[in-house]
Structure formats: structure tokens, C-alpha cells
Length: 450
Image (tube, rainbow, N blue to C red; front, side, top):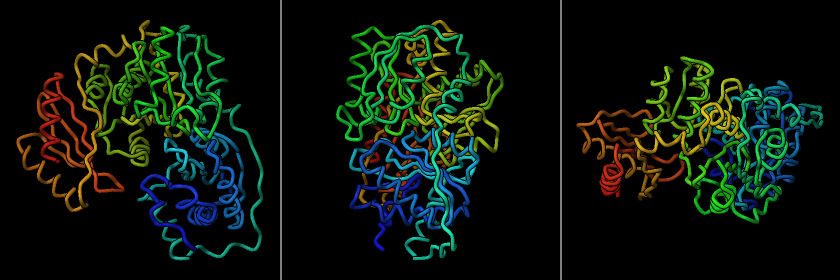
């Protein structure tokens, strides 16, 4: 059995189809997933990639063979799969997807009961070792039963429950579904809002004929930015391939970093729930804890990764959590991430504040200047560790912690450097109190890394 070890990642299973990840792997993962969870009934969904139907069938065959009942939800986004697992009380669920990766990739996102994620530290490594060690338990005498279900009609009112629909102002918006799974939800959702929309790439197409469904890459936002500017829209919203993340551009075509979105979403929740707890990631701008404190909330820093975020939020009862990469988590959504709740909350905040997105962002953009994430490849994992120690020694006069990589704080600037989970690479995020200071310190730290 030739299932490559490298497809088992920190937060999901992923590889190039069919050379790395294929039907043989999917069938074995289906068996091992059921055995690992001891599952009696699971949910399965899939994205629009051309290989997803065959991979879903193979996974389902393995799960049925291992004795679990399988409910097939068909073509749905990852956050819809989470909703199905929670609402229909499954023992677990999987989405066949490679999220934002190019079209030649595919993979699987896995969750247990209540949509609690499996990760490399909790479940995925066990499934990997079970398969590679030929240790999947023998199947029971009788296979599981297969059925089908729909979640969309229950998903839509769920996400709308996060806002006061009557409060929404008739904004002009440009929406880019990226030919991905947002094309299932966005038409129905925005048809029910009092907004005028220009819609890009709403035809679901796994060949991605217009651009890849990864809005973090500037080239994939060009059409959205151009349409926002050309139509005089108040904002633009884009989703990644499996639609569990959304991204924003303002009415001037400026991309909104995820930490600024986190700050605005924190404000949206603190207007509804004064004193609430917000979790943010170690890379984020000080805009997040500063704004939360100014609005009377509690901000808690956390290490990067959805499994760590969801567990921390459960532990402290946080109402909301945000990562700079566009993953936003919600207590009333089973602590899971979602790609449409943030869009609705931002529109509600714009409406309540009677402000455009650019106007909401103006106080942040004139106070916080961020580098964005900058990656540097090194020769080995040993070199990565040595560089972190070298940086710690060089900036020994700053306030330091090692929650996730190395973070160093000074009065007017700070940075975080984290190692990659999968390759010898360091990721730098840095912020300064002025544009010049940010640029100078960014270049200084990069020179030391490189």
C-alpha cells in the first residue's frame, strides 16, 4: 500500500492528485478515520475540484467498509460541513478539499464530534501511523449504510442569526466567489440582503478559469479591486476555494489585512456583548488588543493554528477569535471558522457606524503599520532553531516570549518569527508605529535572518 507519509500535514491531509493523494489513499483514510474515532455515523462533503467526486466516493467506501453509516452532503463548503456535523450530531465529518491550493491539489479536512478539528498533534498523526503501519483494525461483519442530506436551507438562517438583518444599509458590493464553494451560498445569502452586488466568478468550476481561489495572493484580487474601483462600491468581499475564509478590500481598492478585520469583528461583538473575551493570534497587529481594551473587552493572545484556537476559545468561553490569515472563529458556531459570518458582521458594523469600510479602517491605518508575512527559506531545521536563538540574543533588551516561535516587543515596534510546520522556513511579521520605522526594522530583522 503506497500512501505517502508527506500528505499528512499539521492541520489537514493534502497533496497533488493523483501522484501524492489519490483514491487508494482516500479509501484507507476513510477506514482509519472511522477506526480512530470509533465512529458510528459521519458526514462527508466535497468541494468543486475535478478530482473531488472520485475521492469522496473512495473515502465513503472506506468508511462504510469500516462499519460507519455515512451521510453524504454533496457539494458544500467546509464551514457548511462543520454546520452539518454540529446540527445533525455526527460522530465526525470530513470535507474533500484542498482549500486555497491550485487546481492540481486535493485533500481532506477532518473533524470529530461537535466539529472539533483533528490535527497533526491530535488525530491526523494517529491516522497516518495506523495506515502506514498496516494497523487499521479489521472491519465488522456488516458495512455501514449510506444516505444523503442537505444542509444549505439550515445553514443560511444560522449564519444570518449573527446579525440584525433589519439594520443592514443598502451598500454597493463586489463579490468574488473565485469559482469556488462560495458560489453555493453567496447568491442565496446576498439575494436576501438590501445590497446591490456585482458578482465575479460565481460559476462553480474546479478548473479555476479566472484565477486561483486564494485571495491572499495579490494577483488573484486584481479583478475584484478593479471592479470595486470601477463601480464605486463600498467594499469588496472574496472567498477562498472551500469558502471557510473571506477577505475584504475597501472602496478605494485597498486590501484589508486579517488582523485589522479581526479588530473590526472584535468591535462588532463588543457592541453586542460588552466585556466579551476575544482570542487573537501571536502574529497580529497591536490594533487587536488595543481596540479590544478600548472597547472594554478582554483580548487573549494565542499560538497559530485552528486546532489551538478552537480549544483555547472553548477553555475560556471566548465569543470570537481571529487569525491574520482570514480564519475567524465563533462561539455560537461551535467555535468553528466560517466564511460568511464575518462578511455579515462587517456589513452590520458599517451600517451601525454609518461608515464605509475605509472610514472604519482609517484610525487603524494611521496608527499601525504592518509588514505582512515575509517568508525566508533556510537550509535545514537546525538552522531554523539556530536563527531563532540568534534573534533572541540580538534583541535581548526587548520583552520576549516563545508562545509560538519568537516574539519580541519594544515600545514602538514588535515582531514575531515563526518556523513553518512543514519545511525549513521562517515567517516574519513585524509592526512599527510609523511607516519608516516599520520598514527600517523589517529590513534589519530580515538581514539578520538571511
